[in-house]
Length: 336
Length: 149
Image 1: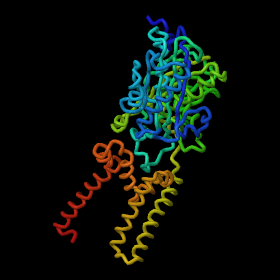
Image 2: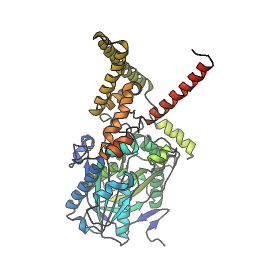
Image 3: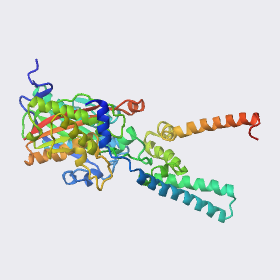
Image 4: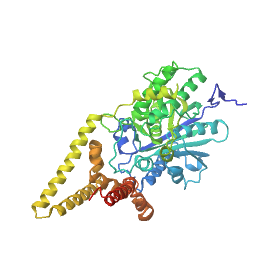
């Protein structure tokens, strides 16, 4: 019998694992966005000095890990497990960023929810007594995603208003059993929800029902309300998806107020940056969480925060075969 | 919530395509490309080229400029405003053929550029050829039965 499960599917950490350090690496557009001041490590060059976008993405992951490990004063040799993933086919962004590390590694694919998926698994591994120190790592790159999911970069296609802009960025969080930092109190893994959205250019709409399910489950299981938290952050629902989430929760009598924000809406400025519905990608919630939210929590701006990574679990093949886009959302509760 | 109800909610929350703005952009940019093409043709005629050669050189010039603008990363910026206005003229086809070349050069000449060059325009070529064969066949039959001369 599970000792840590509460309600229908939330897990309480008996000895809350601690995020002892985090780091984000971003691209030029993210640096120019509203959160630019929080991103000290960024790349002007979209190739990051490499000769392909895939290598550039792996390099950003490596740099995010290096920064986070330096802050925690550890090396990869001190890690028990790494949970990493990205959007590229067969997760090559992570496979290649970790190939020289020698660290025991689980490759994850949760689309844009991967950062939170990694945090959940890190916390479970530590609180379950399997590991002392883990890292959760993810990345995405606008150019490598475009070529995999859509058209060549220079092709003059027309972007619909509901489209989102893949964030070029990587994030790494070091999770430890003991130490100073931000605690992971509860975790709530998501379930796949498919509401038959077939438009790949409207991923916020595809992911919002999954996010509503996870958030409702978590609030029910913990007998809390949105106002009990200083910040509720969703991954990359964008403008459309986050307004849909608010509407969906209203039907369950859950009201999201001023304390709700979406990473995809925070990272870019819709007025000056032509990103339509907002940012997306694994690197979206990863860079906002690791570069902005966790450091601000350390400074005391927020005490209790819910972070929900949202993923659209389709592939170019499934879309071409006329399949709809299934969505998922994983949630962690963080506190100082 | 039922899937049908959700679809309606999504529809209500999704901004509609700015149709008139799109049409206007396509008209102006697409029209400008055609006017520029005509100007080139007039120029070639002025320099003593024959009508047929001038038309061919006009197409070649537009294709060259489109590929050049794709290469220096400008063509897609026109398309943001121009939409179908940059897609329909011959320049759109040149952009659709040259952009995968830039994109997939990392995978090499044989495994990258060769197969991927048709990744966007492949359908246009395949069904364009098929349509021309069908047209030829119909024309041949009509010619044989004496409907067309």
